[in-house]
Amino acid sequence: MSVAENEAIRVIEVKENPLLRRKEVKLRVDHFGKGTPRRNEIREYVAKLYNVPVDVVFVVKIKTEYGMNISTVTVHVYESRERALEIESEYIIIRNEGKKEEKGGNQ
Image 1 (cartoon, rainbow, N blue to C red):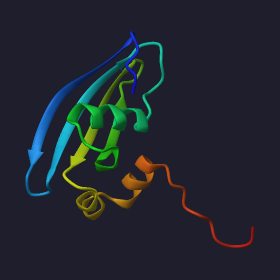
Image 2 (spheres, rainbow, N blue to C red; image 1 turned 90 degrees about the vertical axis):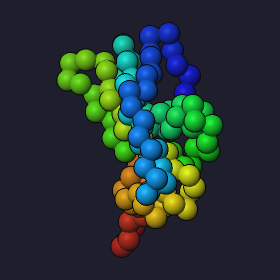
Image 3 (spheres, rainbow, N blue to C red; image 1 turned 135 degrees about the vertical axis):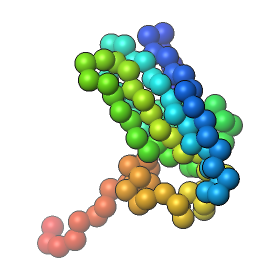
Image 4 (cartoon, rainbow, N blue to C red; image 1 turned 180 degrees about the horizontal axis):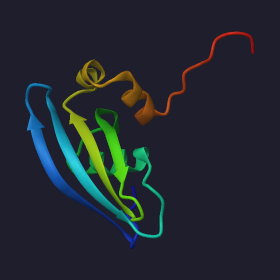
């Protein structure tokens, strides 16, 4: 994610979770004059910040304050891809990787 002049990202909190073998990171993103940041941009930024591959970073929640251009983001950074797939909910994985479910039936 290229941080623009009018966009700032700050790490608010980092929790080590040794049981789940992940870091739980909270970010504050100030995005004045822009919309809510995209998950893939946040994933790339966090991966670069912690020097890990993008496929072990999962954005769990993005909450934008009403009427403001400030978002609070919750991110999980796993030790391995396999561990992430065991722990994270399927819908979180789909949201982060952009895979669409195929519809069955007559098309």
